[in-house]
Length: 117
Ligand code: HEC
Image 1: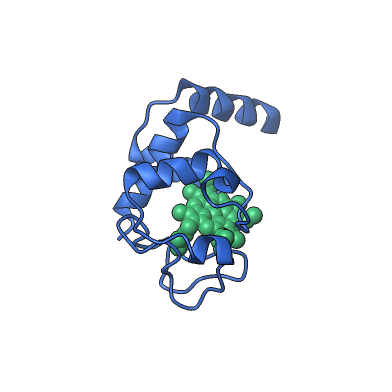
Image 2 (image 1 turned 60 degrees about the horizontal axis):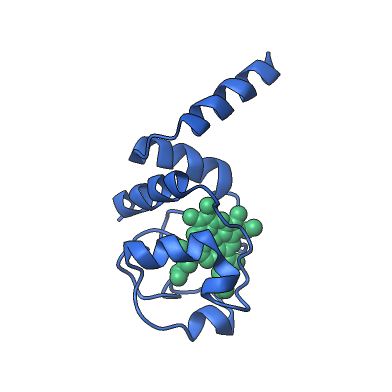
């Protein structure tokens, strides 16, 4: 039964329509273990509440790597997309290793993050 649920979920994710709703599911599955969507950052990663349009490495109370802290600029859609497609390419030395290979999944996650103001 659990296997069937997993397969159904995987098929749904592969079907990949880039809606904010899919983005929420993807965020919960791939990002939530390290990132909060509340004002306070957790120990494993900065808060992503309001990250879209925010200063890069701008969550208060989180100790960013020098790589990300020194990057400069703000998180546009394009910057978020670039970071998620390859964090270490975007900011060599970043503490985040998780990337999202599928462009549709990245678009869905970025769309969802934009709803989290
Ligand atoms: C294993 C933990 C972990 C997971 C899983 C993870 N991240 Fe991160 N993320 C981090 C850490 C740590 C940083 C801070 C990186 C640094 O300081 O170099 C970060 C930074 C970020 C930033 C920059 C935030 C800012 O304030 O500038 C974004 C955006 C981000 N992550 C998005 C995501 C998304 C979206 C996912 C899911 C696809 C995800 N992360 C999954 C650990 C994680």
